[in-house]
Image (tube, rainbow, N blue to C red; front, top):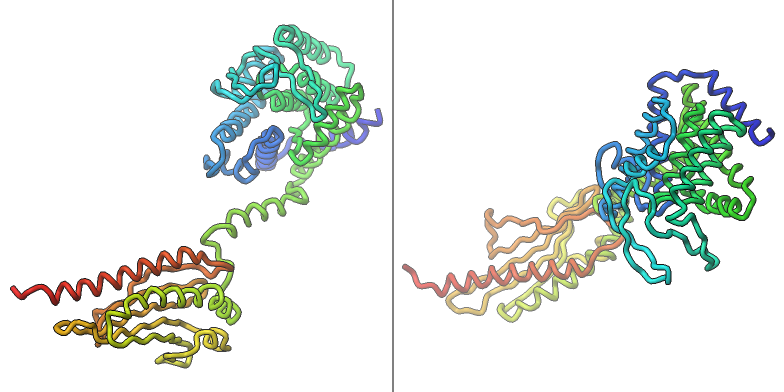
Length: 454
């Protein structure tokens, strides 16, 4: 038959390369399982990405913020795949008991899910794994029409007929194995025997049939979901060929992958690297600790515009609240760069940051002189320092009295990578906290002066 010419050729090529080396076989089986677990669940709306599925199945890592039900569905599907592989190796006959048992492995414990009443009202129903449906599970199509599956009353008989038909076909074949697998998939979906998991079950059982006939696992990709559903709809309308062609296309892709593995070639598909790089980008470059900028003349100029100018303005406003307590008040900005060991004090900050010289540090300096208390006059120094390294900066605070002593150390209060934007509200809150530290320092000096000697 012309439909199966290419698939027969590929199957013969693969059979000629068998058996695969154990390492090659395990490598390709792992890829098939991961792709199958991810895509079959994604088709049904599971939110885990391929990378999150890999992390869950290979390393037991759950994805933050994703529903636990999605994790359980992936784990259950993986268990069902492994169960299916054992079943094929043991060459046991397909029975309704096995199908119900696989459904139980797939879904795990009983759970509730959202549903609709016959009148369209929202409700909840309990899903009991391994049990045929107890109420209708018809669906409303995109056109607003109701699509009817087998009724709960008719389901046991129709499932019995389906299994009997399949076993008769295995005994006296009239169909190509791939056509048999596609037909079984379609008939199973038309019955929709369970309250949940019918799509995943149909693809599991289709693969069971393919594996029994020596074909590799076949993965229907989530990106092909619309084509897949459209082909099933065409079969519902009396035209089964689009669905059969769709399944053949996917079986051929699986055969080609297995042949590459048998030849020791790369089993990464053309877009696999792009997918992995996109995932790596999401995992690394979207994190708070991702290094996206390094200290340069361009970064230096941006740093002034994005953060330093705001920080200077906002912190100055906080510090001006203390001016009334002192007779004289001064403020300035200073910078330190290579070749300027002592630094430059009182510079224009914008000019300093726009200069061709790459800065090592900068500081905002306040001198509050002669506290207005006759028996307790002192002068206060407050300095906010910015130290620049290759990938980020550190902000430190120094509060002390003149003359400064060696015990007056700077306290690191903030650090960050260089970013394309900064949280000004957070900087404002931090400056408010720093102003409170200045207050505490002054209040302590006042209390010290007011305390009589022992």
